[in-house]
Image (cartoon, rainbow, N blue to C red; front, top):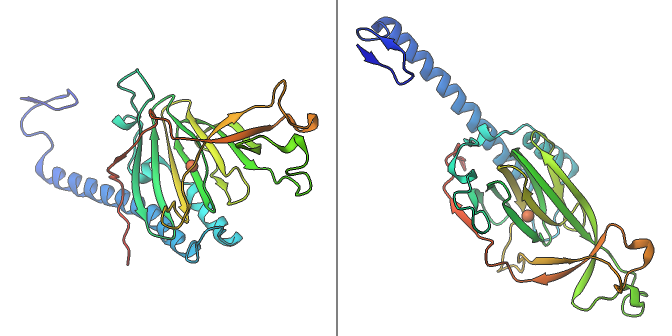
Length: 275
Ligand SMILES: [Fe+2]
């Protein structure tokens, strides 16, 4: 007599051998099918990115058809497609002191685009940062996340430098694009080089995972640095036209906070085949 891992008591050798063979064959086929379909989605995402970002350079936006194709793939992606489950250690905040650690699972990167997943424990924050000259697709795979995003306000040339309401030393005027909680399953959000919330901040309301497709990727060599910002809200004594106070903030560059650390972790989902 032995006890199976699930605690059921069986006698003898358990499943009879002929049934056992059929059972394990079926199990193998099921596992293969699941692994094929997982590989299929990630591979399809990669191949579509390769086509959509073939000409990517600073300021590049994929064609409307390619944006539609990428969005259609990402909209239907789930954590299971990339081999993630909510009970993985990446999503636990073991040490309650300080900022929860953020993990990045690198899937692919070339000089045209990158694909990766940010894993955030509850209350994890990716602080306000920009994406210079980039188009970014963000798909929440599971969990709830607060997204706040801004776009720069183009100050009229005649106003800039002359009109006191458009000046804030060391800061630039930005308009809020998004300020809401998103819960999976939800649509992919897309930001563009000049609009769509190019400067954003993620705060995990629950443990969550977000898959990012970025084209072109950050590159210090090509001058696409990641810059972090502080928000300065209009208040008493601030210099902003009354009609524009709501929905705006001044953003000033800041150093990356010491307690914001993104640690690389090994991606264990389906591999990409670069053929
Ligand atoms: Fe970002």
